[in-house]
Length: 184
Image (cartoon, rainbow, N blue to C red; front, side, top):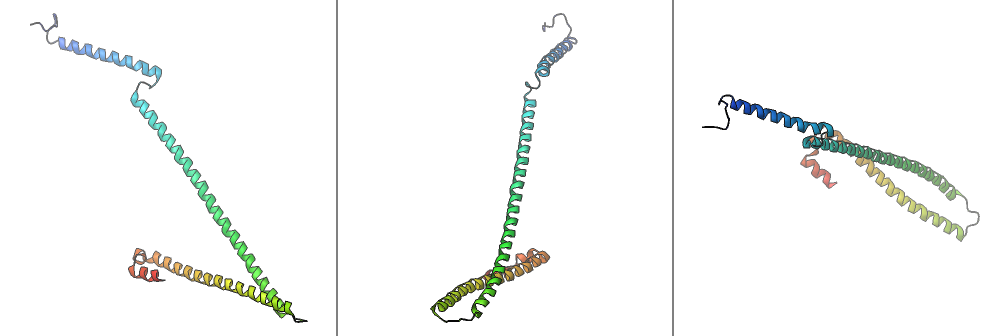
């Protein structure tokens, strides 16, 4: 029986075939490595995928950094705007308090001024003054009541947070306290 090995013994023929196969494999690898070295890793799909993945990661990082810096600028500008508005309102309130003091002294002067010749003009002037002061006092009493209530509530909130800090969730999640505070 001839196995197609032509004049070779069975023991050397498989080794030659293996050797030929290995040489062919090496030469095919060398040929496939040459274009990759010349062109770069264009023909290697895994390397191309890795490059794309790295580029995408860098793009996402740059986007996140830009978004974070923009958010910080917007957030800090909002905080600055709020602080500026609060300071402006405080200045306005101080001016109003001075005007109220001036109004009080002017009102005292107007009421205490002696009337030389009593007439209809004086009656309407004093009635108008009385009406304006009455309306002002209503607004002032409403504002005063509101401020007193705010101060009481802020004092209660200070107590609440001090208790919440010391006792934790056993205080904040207590059913009896929540029922008592929901009523008023």
